[in-house]
Length: 91
Image 1 (cartoon, rainbow, N blue to C red):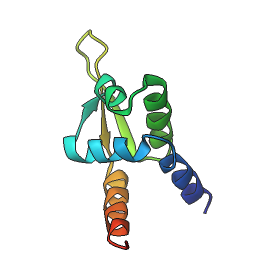
Image 2 (image 1 turned 180 degrees about the vertical axis):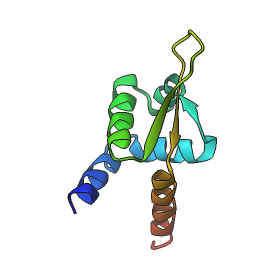
Image 3 (image 1 turned 120 degrees about the vertical axis):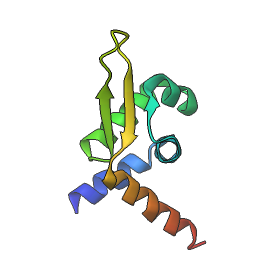
């Protein structure tokens, strides 16, 4: 149950659902693009760190000498997105 509580807490952060939705649509995104969408890089960093710890998001460092990093949803993240979409139908 502890993992579910951490997940709910992470999803309750401002901007977290936006990050999850963006990654579901885009498949992979650079950190700066996520930060722009959320509004603050520190907020995006906390959200992505939480999501990585929970296994919702993966971080991939590209070996391009530019320090480019892509984030994408894991299979667990995609399942979570599906659950959240089902919850929208409960209105």
